[in-house]
Amino acid sequence: MLLGTASWGNDYGLLNSRKLGISEAKVILREALRAGINGIDTAPDYGDSEMVLGKSDLRPFRVFTKISQAAWSNELDRNSIQFRRSLSRLGLESAEGATFHSAESFLSTPTTSLELIESLKDAGLIKSWGVSVYSEEELISILAVAAPDYIQAPVNLIDRRFLQPRIANLMEEKKCKLQARSIFLQGLLLKNVETLPRFFQPLKELLSSHKWASREGQLTPYVSALLFVLMAEPVDTLVVGVNELEHLTELTSAMKLTSVLPDFRHADSKEELYLVDPRNW
Image (cartoon, rainbow, N blue to C red; front, side, top):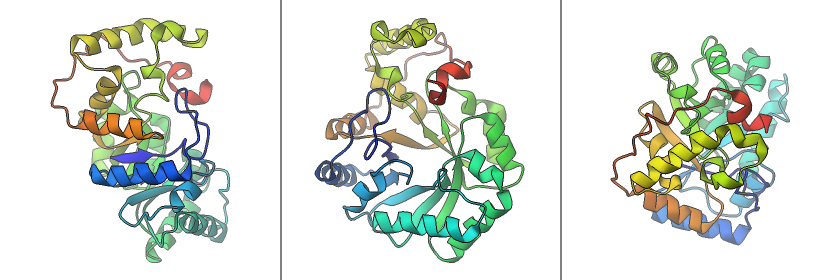
């Protein structure tokens, strides 16, 4: 499990639109360790998130940070300097993993991208690397030229593209693990269906069926959405956004449940990218 920190130094998502203070961050990190959660996902493009995290001792954590999309260059040295600055902000000498923040960055100059990864590994700055993707096409293009240790991709109740057998089999062939992000679809899966903005009306019936299934299983929408991804066989790790202690408590309580997942077979997923890809909102 990785704590997602996109909103720690940045307004982000439909529900998590409050920046996190340094004192609050320290409490959440302390309680996360007590609960057995020692993974963090962050990025230099998440506003002040790296700086906020760096005010705590992160050495007990497995930290994955990203290779900036905004600062990406075709010059190896410049990219290396940017990543070292991330480590400096985090107060770390090395990270567990380096994730390209976008497939576009990685694929723009794959030779430079792979040279960067090799140089970071040779310097002992990272143990693994991956790429954050939005589409199956991006994943296929990446695996055609490289063998990342992991791919970070959206997986949730209404976006199941990366759970398809053909995608899961391709990743297994490459020994590439799946880090599932956006499991609540930036909070959309947790919102009151009746108060959805007009843009999301095409999802109203589908979301209502998910809520009904959750109630039948005596689970909250949060727990259902979490367990659906947690129990998905292709998924290796979850990235769960947490920016309040209450969120962490809810997360750790849900992880302890042994409930049977509601039957969502009647509640289909969506393939219309304008609805499931937040970049289009």
